[in-house]
Length: 272
Ligand code: ADP
Ligand code: MG
Image (tube, helix red, strand yellow):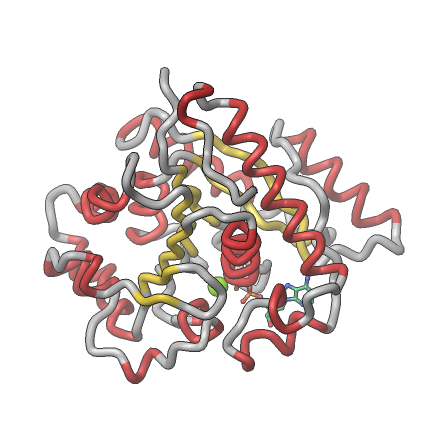
């Protein structure tokens, strides 16, 4: 089967605080640095991604909520950001989306349908979906719209709890709404490389669930705390930090993986 021109990845884990949003913003900025056209979609009613890219959700009249529930054209809502990525923002309205969509036929497909005009030859190279910390309607819609899933994971003793549940959801999505969904792997975040414990936890999870590990692990560093308030990703606020560098390597590895599954004539454009 031919690889799609646009790669849509859902960044999902129903646990909060595992760096889903940080990873979406940072990988997005890193892909943009490499010349890729990137759209980030904020699917969390907390709108942390929107805020962290310098947009105050309270200033917005329209968001991904109207796209999902009213069929609004997403291009009317997409914003450009200073990090070189486009953003389909969220507002607190999105908190109603789960309830609004619950009685709607085809709700699992609503995001995929909304993004249809943004994918393909003239669309984005990458669309990254920042999922909320639940396995509800929005996460299932994201998994249905995605080609692949990245699972950010903090490598601590209990972090495997929930991974099985997430993979059950992925399995259901494959069965009922998106046969082609692939798990690209776990992305170790908030990683403390000084201990062997983190590596042990990571190896255990990867073996238990037969999951690939996306390299390199993202080190735990205080620099990440400063970025969201500045309205820029860590790639801009702390250009040469280990965290920024790690996300650049992850982005390059994602491109390499995408290229491997793509016919030659359809290689991604990168800046010379
Ligand atoms: P999620 O979207 O999964 O809830 P966030 O991306 O919002 O997680 O991250 C949770 C918190 O952890 C935020 O305060 C963020 O700044 C911080 N954080 C994320 N990655 C790192 C890191 N590598 N080192 C230190 N703090 C981090
Ligand atoms: Mg988040």
